[in-house]
Image (cartoon, rainbow over all chains, first blue to last red; front, side, top):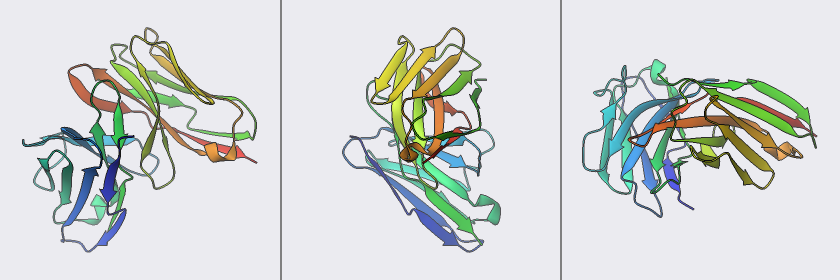
Length: 115
Length: 113
């Protein structure tokens, strides 16, 4: 089946530093990827939609200069959290849309802790 | 704006029981609905996808139904096992022209041996 590999699974960083999260589609081409954020006991909240070769579309309230998304190829999308703060600590998950009506596949998530 | 609600928020059942998880959505004009499973600290695993024209989908011990007109979907799990313990999320795709999913908060299921 279609697999999205997400790395790292866990990362701890200091306030003010930047962290990059990668999502790779292993056996298919992902023209569209989605980035979600999940707080404890809450649902997934869509942050942005990225299309290969174009700028990402951010949801209302998401700072595009803080959460940089790059989708430079059909198999790789990255999310960079810049100048991280403790309130950015969360669980980040990427997702790729499958061709046809086959739904979506998700990465395994990244637990970000900013200290 | 589409809103998705899942009831109950948590459920604990003894092993072997059949159970039903509920999902409701406010705007019935959906394209499809998908049920996912999420284990603690992990990503999402797709369980069943129901297109708006379908009434139900089955996979093994899982059966998902969709009543679009009333804005409801149910996930039926037969003969529950401890390995079924996880959080179950439903998500709706709002339209053919939009690829965005709107998620519920999930139902945390615990199956007691």
